[in-house]
Length: 343
Image 1 (cartoon, helix red, strand yellow):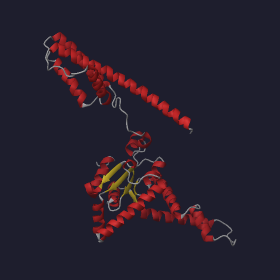
Image 2: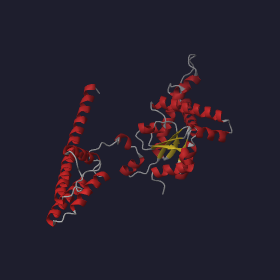
Image 3: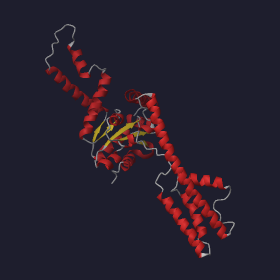
Image 4: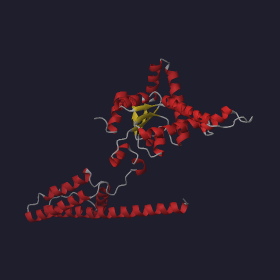
């Protein structure tokens, strides 16, 4: 797409947003004016120096009140200020005047109530992301799919949380070791197909073993071939079952293939993670610390290389959990509550 086309789209969106915002601001200002005038008229009828809600310069009062209506029309601040006007109107002794002002007051309340939720505000929602949110997918498609991707820092008990969650939900569980086994099986199938082909390898320049590996890996380096094989396996699994998957850039792979899922990142303070590794592995604290730093950097590089995203950056995930604040069991319960499976 050319720069001119992009600029035209940006200008169109900006013009639409400006028009919409201008309309909302006009509505907010007109409503503010009604509230201000009612307050002024009630104050004059009551004749009490304590009766005025909006005092000071009229223009400043109107600007402040219209801004409040524009940004938060259903909030308690607006309700409380309008309620003060109504309370004062109810003290008017002349029944006819009181009735007139109360009708105006009720009309204003009705106008406020009819303002749409989020009136004048700009939502943070990104529909391209929210469409893959499992709860939205269930609601929009009457589907009950459940795939949960868990990324974790070393020592944060992310693997334990994932396994416990899979057990609780009765879902299949996949981690690096299981994927490694699945890739080996897939490679064995490719080797079998390779052997079944009648290919002349008698030429002295062709090494049969190298030719076999080249065919299996599509000419890619072994690490890249393993990643793409895992990605293919992940997509195949997502077509036929629900599961919990640990790491493997699964969140990005599923997102790129428009497959609904929940992505969770689990971490904890470095000191707590190092202590946990120390106790589990019966190794010195310094060695545990070096190990977690090394493995975290390895995961960060892997994630960056294959997804071009930042591993551990909160906005890349649906839910981030400090496992030190919850422990394994409560972290599982927290995820269940988020996905509405805690019943």
